[in-house]
Image (cartoon, rainbow, N blue to C red):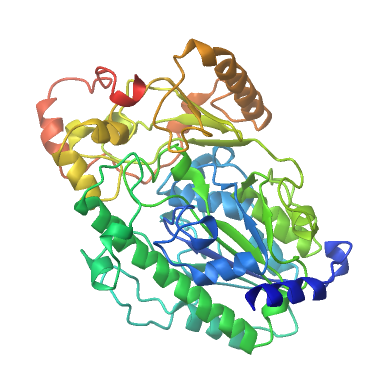
Amino acid sequence: MKLLLTLLFALTWIPTSHAAEAPRPNILFIIFDDWGWQHAGAYGCDWVKTPNFDRVAREGVLFKNAFTSNPKCSPCRATILTGRNSWQLEEAVCHGGIFPPKFAVYPDLLEKSGYNVGLTGKGWGPGDFKLEGRTRNPAGPSFDEFTQKPPAKGIGTNDYARNFEAFLTQRDQTKPFCFWMGFKEPHRGYELDSGVRLGKKLEDVKVPGYFPDNPTVRGDLADYAIEVEWGDQQIGRTLDLLKKEGLLEDTLVVITSDHGMPFPRVKGQIYEDGYHLPLAMRWGKGIKPGRVVEDFINVRDFAPTYLELAGLPVHEQMSGKSLVNILKSDKNGFVEDRKTMLAGKERHDIGRPNDWGYPVRAIRTPEFFYSHNYHPERWPAGNPETGYRNCDDGPTKAFLVENKGPFYELAFAYRAEEELYDLQKDPECLKNLASDPKFAATKKELRARMEGMLKDEKDPRALGNEAIFDTYKYLGSRKNKGYAEWEAAQKGQPLPEEPRKKKGKNEE
């Protein structure tokens, strides 16, 4: 029966020849906070249930290769809003920084063209958008009046669907809308053992290869799963609301995340599960249903897409590439042959002398992932000496810290200057091939290609001006609860460069 309905849907779908010929669509952008790409039924996951995300993928298009250039909340969200990679955003490259008003954002541009604009939940953040003169969140004016009681203590109380309904009620109904729905979920903290309490079975949980497989980690992942499922339920309520209001077929629904799950070696780290995102889009009047696209998509491509669909020119500041041709196509697989993606980060954390960051740039192709760690003498996830590791607290992190060993080193130890992984054989990036002579030519070619692309994007680090990243205004503090003791031990001495220790297991 489901197959019959899908076929009927496909037969009744009538493509338009160009986006500008169709009425300007409404745009509903739904973004999870810390949801990993692999944890959705549409991607083959059977222990995290996402029927509503799967429905959007089934009735629209599922993207298998969507990425953020920077796997932390505020840099990713700044990229989405501006259509620029994070190293092109000055202070907004930092996590917990400011948002320079010199950069145009798509909600403002759409609002000026007649769109109703709104936001509920988390927009751009964390950071302070008011420091440089903005009067509202770059994602739009907030609608956060209504709350609901969630099934676990760690889940937020925002009633996303009802706040969206409040926005729809007050809007000018003669104009299209653009709304940002920012889930708090599945960001930590979690109610301990809430996953099991709400029906998850630990034996069903799939543990990544970079974690030990034990009840502590399985329980932590189960707690994460029920928060993902709560967010998915809010998608269902929102789709029902759109249908009731007669708006569903006229609305482009986009569902994604800002980066991977809030676990060690994932969030904030430049590995596959950190920057690879879930992404599905549905637009009844504009997207042929049931498609699966393999082109490499960056979140900076959203802004130029929305502008083109609205009949506006892509803003000159935007370096992303519109997805309209892909959305309008009836093809599966690689539609535009986009097969290369860049990623990178600068300052994301506290607990480092002199507020140093851990700068990385990386390139991803269908076959390989290559990264350059510019300062391998620094800790990649914050200084253990200062009591800080750049990872949200939780049972998995606590277990790794308390039980030092190969899994701890994968998450927190020093890294080699160069890393190379064969994604066909090693999708979890566990075996670094950078020192293997058999891959020397591959490594050289990828590094040259990456550096050339970064120069084209005028990345200061690629142009020899890396020092500028340490001059940008940054709200993150180097202080933390363990820092005072460490600093006291250094009293009377200049803050040293971090000592280089022996190689970790993941560097061999």
